[in-house]
Image (cartoon, rainbow, N blue to C red; front, top):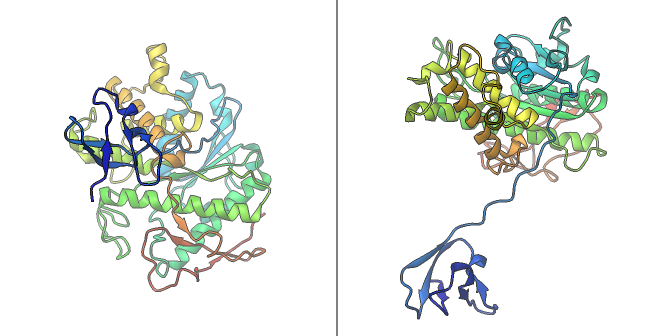
Length: 400
């Protein structure tokens, strides 16, 4: 049976149109649930479509200031935004952040996993540091995993990889909470090779990734890093109950930047890009203009700046490297703002991508005093061969 609105005056505005439901007082049209409703006994004709109310803004992360110290633990896909051509530090200087060469440090190791970086002793020199041993100096840890990232959607396959990733990520985060200058933790979600996740020009993807190409694999990379962030958030609150209720691990979405850039190239609206391969300098590392775009994204999310607005107030003030055109810079500034406004796990008030990636928290996990870390089941994904009530353990637990 169709839902019907009783309209008392056709000249009234939508907000003043009254409707009556069984056992309910008259309400305005603004109170209707989303859907299509029809008028009855009125000169008005045609359906009235009621849009769903927008979701509430996402949780806000506290932006960094000039006084904030941050360390970036990763590899060459971290270098794509953090260090290549000094992009980020030059950009920060141009927008008024003081002393970024002192406050921003890298802890990079080519091709390294989280586990490899935990166990490696870094030479501390210039802009480099050891994100594990020198964490007391930093308010923020930004960290990523190596490729291929683990497929948590397949909990009975690639098990050791999943265990290592969650275990050593928890070690880094626990170390930050206990020994760091602050407890701000961000995951940098990365992207696959242009040939597809787990593949390369000379090697096909493993069966775990064979269903994906580059573009279709990007959302899956986002889900994986959201899963890692959700798991880490849950685990740290179990280990450290004094953490604030709103503490969480954030995600800065490199994967989503690549997703939008790819789509915009296909649509012909990405300045300076003709084909998708123009994104990269090889098969996976960002070409120079793309590197600047990633820098704009991380700067926008990390410090809460609006680069478009800053340049509008003082034209030409925002750093643009010689290898990026003005049109490309403006495109990247707008894209960074778009992602900041859109993506909830980045902490800028977005509403997309904030759904839980880890199901059953509170009843799937058995607490312990160290020794094993137990992941839950990825939400909305097939958990093959294992009941949801018996999560697979992750070895480790050597937290500070």
